[in-house]
Image 1 (cartoon, rainbow, N blue to C red):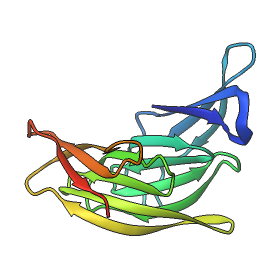
Image 2 (image 1 turned 90 degrees about the vertical axis):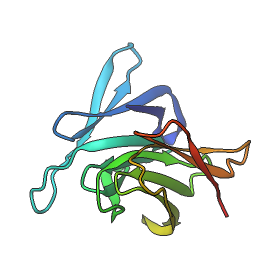
Image 3 (image 1 turned 60 degrees about the vertical axis):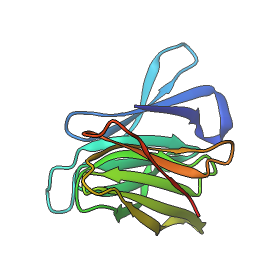
Amino acid sequence: LTAGQAPHNDPSRALICSADAVGDVHVHALESDGTWGHCTTFSASTADGTPSLCTSLRMRGVRLYCAYSTGHVRIFDLVSCSMSVQISAHARWINSLEVHPNGSLFATASEDTTIGLWALTETGAAPKVTSAGHITAPDALLTGVAFCGGFDKTHVAASAYDQAALQAWKLD
């Protein structure tokens, strides 16, 4: 579940996004009468029919970032209600996704024991995603990822299913 302001800075409409049991992502808007109206649904279907569950999602501005059980990340445009980009981020299930407050970086944490750091750049009509690095956390089934470290969020931290301690790394 993630929530945010409606695109175009409309303060009267809040958006909420969630994924269902088949992986579809639903976007709803809070209407002026206090009810939730359905805006759009982004399908979880894949080209080869592989089941794909949405495991983590975050909304930042007009972008909706979604991580999937297939190791993919899809970024949707909430204005045009279309997918902007899809990347093969990990070899295994992604358990967590977080967007840096500056909006130009996001991180994913996966069962494959890695944190992926990804740079998002706006290039004309569609954003472009490039790898900004991977951090390995040996023998750790990663379950969470967050940016931390003061106002500038200079570190990335991760939690693991079978470990009591958090791990953190300084961003370069």
